Image (tube, rainbow, N blue to C red):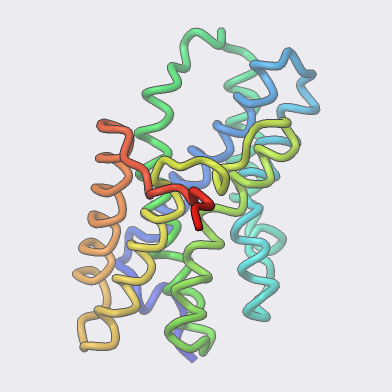
Length: 209
């Protein structure tokens, strides 16, 4: 059976950790901006960081990654500690949004690749990429009482879908490994970056008859 490390370049595990750190930071910040305790910051960081990957692994019948890799929880708790010990004004929303865009694209590709490695068909594998990239943020928003990213018109989930679907599509035409991962991640990041810069959004349902 293939594994994600045979489908993604050698730097993928470290890229995975970097994406995990960004999402964990966003979770900790959500709690910090509401004046919560250190324990709550740690909880938000962990849930946001590992939420998407946990759901993905359960759905594809894989060992839950952070239960077997101590680095994942350590990264989340470290980010919570960093946020706890620094002023919120150091963490600009705009800067975090750009880092989040990188993590979104990388996680979408990584999630799709892992699903393929566990024998998931192409379409569900692409959806597993979206789950990996977005579910943690959805959980964070629900816990924080914020409108979910699913309910915001600005392109977010769409960018993750582009990255994961493109990675799967490139694999179907014979392009795998580093070239496919880089192309797909860049496409997803570019769409998310454009949405941040120009506030791009999909048309909303108007209910007209």
